[in-house]
Image 1 (spheres, rainbow, N blue to C red):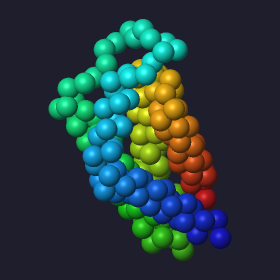
Image 2 (cartoon, rainbow, N blue to C red):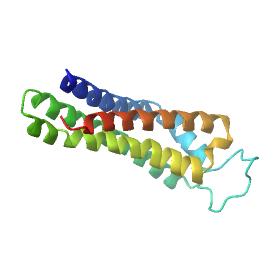
Image 3 (spheres, rainbow, N blue to C red):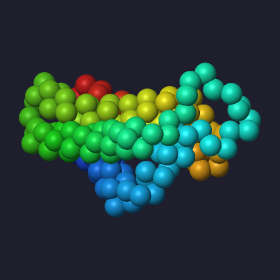
Length: 160
């Protein structure tokens, strides 16, 4: 039962990442606008000063959004491969099942990096997105997403 739950958790992380990437692609214009808004450091009355520059060049905004979507897709694909590997190893011995966790753990770890490293560290700390309502909501969501994927990573990483 534990093995099947680990497969299901990694598959869920895969779907989670892929769904976010696909939503961003379907809503490319609004996604660009949101990244542009956050990177432009607009509406920062609480902490109006910044140690680094805002980003307003369209090529940089598109690059930032491209990195986000690419990493979401990569995390989803990698975790999906991990779920498939775990499914195939579900009846194997413990050593083989533990080896089969590699891609699933990598996908979940990449998801944590996206929503903690990019959204919380870069978006939240550097671009101070917490200062606006839209940014604060995204920052809260990124915390949830990082923690959920991190929790899956912790559960799956336990030796079988």
